[in-house]
Image (cartoon, rainbow, N blue to C red):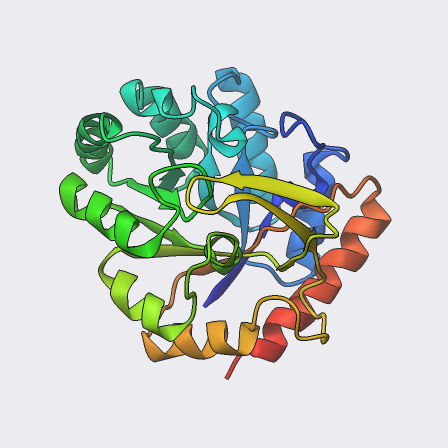
Length: 277
């Protein structure tokens, strides 16, 4: 697998800006041994000018990195009612991906009516050699495994697939290890990892459509309490299905200094290396 560092680690809670300069994140990723960055609109998106996009691309190239995926519209990670609108106007998101050199764009579907828009958007993306991907995520069409597979079969486009994310599956009460990976293998295009435990103590919470409000607590990836994601099962499952794409460190940490970002990136890289068979 190729390891990717998400700019989300230093993203502000509003998800629209970074707490530290992007150039620092890129430098840290390169020096810590990541091969890619996962980009979000907090750095560059459909709101960015051509000059801004090209400046970000020059930083990526300067550090000999690639962009594993772009989430080009603020509404998509915010998972709000406007998130699916990017499918209806997919060209700006595709342009961001092309300038940044990414071959994957994250999108969002909320209702069955969004499927037609997803089909059209995938067709347009295919002309540019770009994949559209949807994360397993609460409060959308891709909460549950079987529901997600049903949506993918309706979309029925070879360049429309899934971001496997075990923490979201856990949040929605779904099995997340090898059995699920085998079910979704025809659509598996990207992997995110976060770690959390469902607990009435909170302090955070997310609303799901299938299980209602879910209080949770983020955990370090390397937590050994046994309360969170079983990453040994995740790793062995990915190996079993022969996954060779990107694995992205994607946890929301809200890091505010370059020194803290470096220390975190180093620890995460040591952790993902320890998972390798």
